Image (cartoon, rainbow, N blue to C red; front, side, top):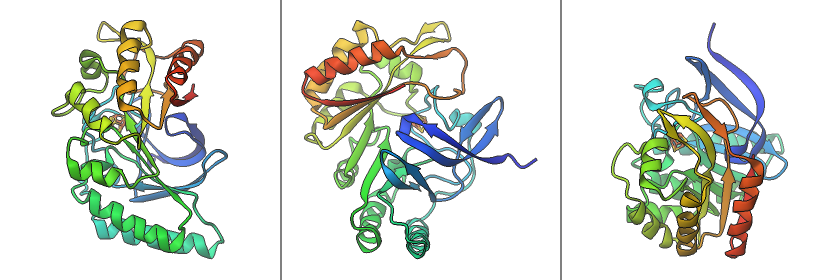
Length: 286
Ligand code: SF4
């Protein structure tokens, strides 16, 4: 049986509701892997109509993290020999999709860079952002541009500059504890938390911090990042970064490794309250 089915479900990590996605089954877990540079549109009560832009290879995963909670699965399980889409391929596919939607009387409310891994790894990322903006201005000038990024590339000035073009520049910071990040996010190259915070400060508020909270066990380690030892330095980092908003979320679906558990809703709400007390807007998904 060809391993693709279409399902309607909620992906709280992306804060999308009722989205239609492609599910690929890998081992015992179902993973979210897209087969095109453009996916959707996804209809959300909160965000409206969102068109997804996937700058990673079709049918596989390409990421500078290897999060043990990743919806795409672990890197080693989702490798592909498919190439990255070219800038022309992304822009032409987007243009053709927007023409198709326009003929149906549909105008997207948001264009979201997300998909099979980390979008900023694409070598033509700044060029693609610029060209997508131009296409957006022609076909749907009122649509916002959003990105979900793990922020591993933000020490590169050209990536920070490109990210500044987004209305919703959503950057991952699960904790500021290096040991926890090595255990859970598993950076695949250079990653220094203090450097990350300094680079995040350089957005001068034009970023949204996305943080995964959870508990459970992995390889004999406690995964609970909601305790004071994690939250107190995390709040100090937020005070330095001064993001426009924070998105707290927890596990929503199966994970590639066993032993992970959702964070408690009341604990997440209490953390959110402390973030609000810093004067930062916060949303909580659980
Ligand atoms: S950063 Fe995102 S795509 Fe990459 S491994 Fe983590 S959850 Fe998966």
